[in-house]
Structures are given as structure tokens and as C-alpha cells.
Amino acid sequence: MSKPAPLTLTVTKTVSVTPNMQRLEFQGDGLSNFPTHCAGGYIKLLFTSNGDTDMTGLEEGERPVMRTYTIRHFDQTANTIEVDFVRHITQDLQCGFAARWAMSAKVGDTVSVAGPGIIQGLNHEADWFFLVADMTSLPALTAKLAELSSDAIGHAVIHINTEQDKQTLRAPEGIRVQWVIEGQAELTETVRKTEWLDGAISVWSACEFDSMRALRQYFRNEKEVPKEYIYISSYWKRGVSEDGHKVIKREDAEKAH
Image 1 (cartoon, rainbow, N blue to C red):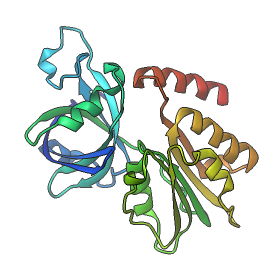
Image 2: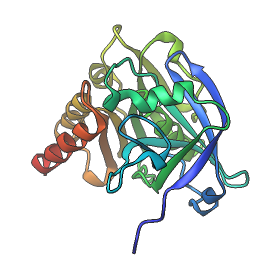
Image 3: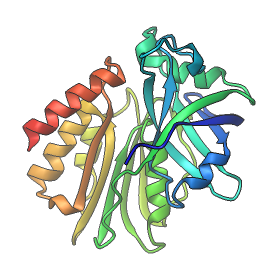
Image 4: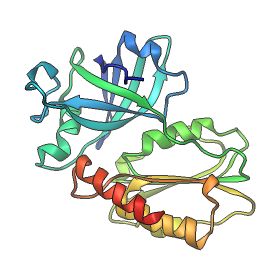
């Protein structure tokens, strides 16, 4: 079966959520074909090698550059999705042009997207939950929190750039949210110091590559969380473009298994 053709979406809203997070709302009739529960899944935004969103600028045979982002919210009635973009400080076009485009995007601008892809969910058969994220995976964590029952218990540990990047999250009362501020604490160490509760645990963790490896060591090897109760992934690697990260991620997965 051939993959569906990319959709052209229009920016209908842009909001600065925090100093380092910009939220864009996109609308397009093609979104009516997206699955109802696609929030937390991902789409791929298409760009030319110069960071332009006009695909007519591609040379014959040239493939678009794709950048992966999470669907934070999907409104099936309005055919809109919300996507959050982290402000990256970089001069590398291959590494940061998607974020720079989002920061300067205006209502009426268009972009082509492919997807959606679905991210593995939480195992809801667990007694308690441990969610770990940084700013790149915060939209996905937000969607995971929304899936939890009102009586769910556990922890959500989130690494952010500054104190001002804290967001108001809708989480069950029994989920303790901890914010880890860059330069004040370290994500992995904060997770290690967090209280381990009784019963079967369900882990969902997505963050920077090196942090992911340290957390995988902790949850899989030290705490021996069964594979069917754990999801650990890296969304990026410091100093490396998304294309380079894909290669490193694939090599790491082969070694891990």
C-alpha cells in the first residue's frame, strides 16, 4: 500500500506559550482522515534544503527534508492540530530551520506534512506511572497525561530550559509533577532520586539521546521494568541534526537488542 500524499496545512494561530516554546495551530481538510486519537503521535514537516516550505522549489528527483513534531492536540470537528516548537539556539540550518520557521510563521502561511505516525502508548494495566520528558517531548507527555484515569498515581519529571518555561498541565491529582530547570538540576539524577512506589510500574520516557541511554540503564537494568511496561525513546541528540540522530538512534537500537 502506498503512503498517503503529504497534506498542505495552513497556519491559523500562533502563540508564544513560554519564552522557549511556540505553539502553532494548523488547519486543513485532509486532517479529517486523521485517526481520532492521534494526539501524542507525530507528523513530519517538509522543507527544502534551504528551509523553505514551498515544495515547488525542489529540483527534479530531490527529496524534501523532513522534521518530526508531535501532535499536541487534534480537533476533528474543526480539522485542526496544535504543534509545539522548541526555540533552538543554533546557526545550523540542518538542525534548526524548522524551529526558526515556526517562530516567524504568520497566520496564512502553509506547510506540507506527512503522517500521522502513532507513538507507543502507556500500559494502563500498571499500578502506577512514571513519565519523563524534556521540552521536545512535553507535547507527547501532555497527551499521555490526558489518557490517564483520574485516580492514576505516579510521577512526571520534565526538564525545561528556564523557570519561565513551566506550563500548566492537566494531570490526575495523584501524579506528582516535578520540573527540572537547566543548570539547577540534572534530569537523570532527579529521576533516580524520585520515590519508587509499590506495585507494577508503567514507564514512558522521551528526551535527549544521552539522557535516554542513562534512563534506559536505570529503568531496564537497575529497576528491571519488564519490556511490555516500558517505552523509552530519544527525540534528539545534542549538537546533531535530526538526520544524524536517526543514524545514531538506529545503531544504538541494534546494540541494545
